[in-house]
Image 1 (cartoon, helix red, strand yellow):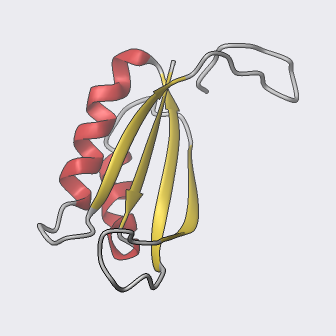
Image 2 (tube, helix red, strand yellow):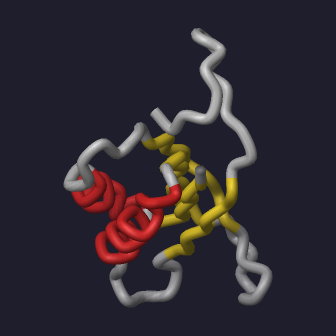
Length: 102
């Protein structure tokens, strides 16, 4: 199992979610508003971004990454970044079921 995390521009969220709806059997996504700080540029003002977190089976990773990359792309600096992280274990709180993405 993998976790796909994406930091994207807030105004691209609808477009990205629309794209993700095209994937059959996609588990739920968590959406959070986050603040990013540049350490490269002199203006250290925080920038509001959106963070998507999606737990998916290994075989869905490339589809999810491609959809996010395609639908979040504007070509401008600050479009965001996608991270793919291995998930060691999951536990459903209600049922105690383990290792499921849904």
